[in-house]
Length: 167
Image 1 (tube, rainbow, N blue to C red):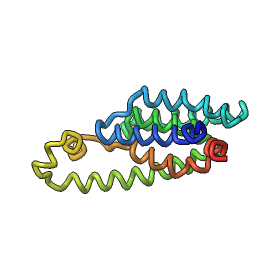
Image 2 (image 1 turned 30 degrees about the horizontal axis):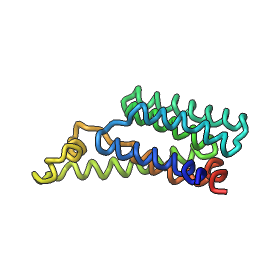
Image 3 (image 1 turned 90 degrees about the vertical axis):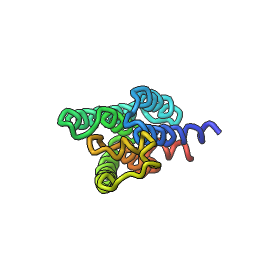
Image 4 (image 1 turned 90 degrees about the horizontal axis):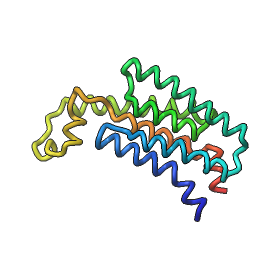
């Protein structure tokens, strides 16, 4: 029972991050902190060696440096940068390259879909929902947390944490 709960922790937090970004265009620092802090007890429960935990931390820091650069250029939001780094902590170096590739592809598709939808008029019934109106606004960014969460789920089942908890 505990293993199942721990196995679902990461996907549930990622789903919450995606829905939060969709509805508010914001990813809470508390949510990212929950992912970071939650990684360590889960890693210890699955028996991950300290050296491997250190490599996961390095993967997270490397992605934080990369995404901070993207944020400083205005290409992604700050919440997206932090979420990507916290996700890389869970995936480690072995899963991070695939994760970033998936995130780029899904983010590109999401962006194209939003750009197309933003050319269409909103009916008054749909426009009365703040989150839909916000998504439709051309001045608004893209809720990239959705792409980050989907990409994470594509890679999560190949991680040491997933293997350790599902064994």
